[in-house]
Image (cartoon, rainbow, N blue to C red; front, side, top):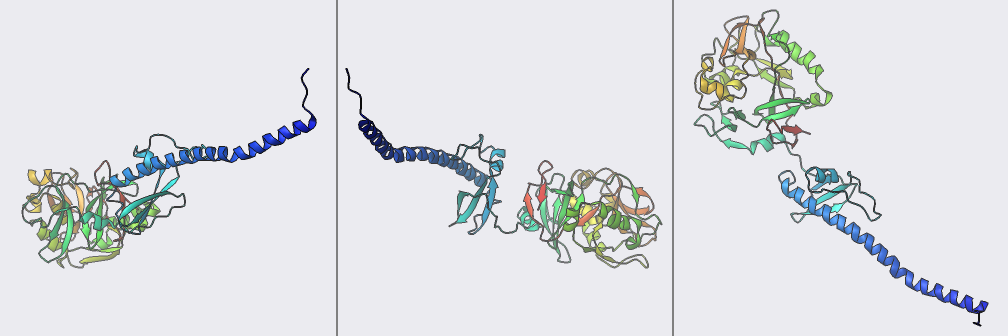
Length: 378
């Protein structure tokens, strides 16, 4: 018959097993922790590799300026398909898609770390400065270098930047709608609504060609302005518009430009309207939008080269800003065939596309200006 363990022997065995467990537990715990840490580090490596691809693609928007800090989320990385699966943390819980990667610039290199409290620190990307980098020719008065943004030096030594040609990437989202950039003037982006307003309107219902007192000026700066979203209103600059006129449109685009800035007006009409927000395009805006090889006078802009090479042209009869200086009740307009005249009564009902300037410190945050990917403002 086998001898049973005594109580003292059983207690001894239990104590011995307890000692062994105490000695063995830390290595086991460390092994478990190590596995979790490795899982966490593996996730981080995937995230940081994806972030590196992201910064490589968007390096123009994330300049290597020491001290800059940029923040991106896992959603950004998944959207660009740099991450294709859900990742987990050390507790095997799925990481939130709003988790942030902090990208710091040190020694002209990107550094990455997970930081949900990331706060960006980067310089302003001023819209006018960014667009000027895309200038394709210094002077549009001589020759042609394709469609795009040009630097124009006028005969009065004024310099501005204009989109010229038929196919130009000057689309921009404003007020949640498509607008287009006419150009850059005094550091401000000048926009024109891509589509005409839904109803035709008179330049002035009283048939008087004084823009300052006209019904259309009042509508654009009161009713239409008040219809805009609050955020859009904050972006509009208060400026002066030139109201110089001419007896006809028998002049080229540069002639129209100088005439608009002159003092030749019908008796009693002001040459300038100050402290205003919304108006119409100048005849010269339309003239300069055509390819630079279009050199005819504005009243002959129905020329095939001028019509087919002009991004502003939209086939409807459309009001412009300047008036007929030799008549009390006529103003300029773009005819459906493409030419500009200023011999129609201002109480006629024509299409309207509002024009405005943005503040000079407006930032571009995304987009390439194409119709599919218009510029987006901060």
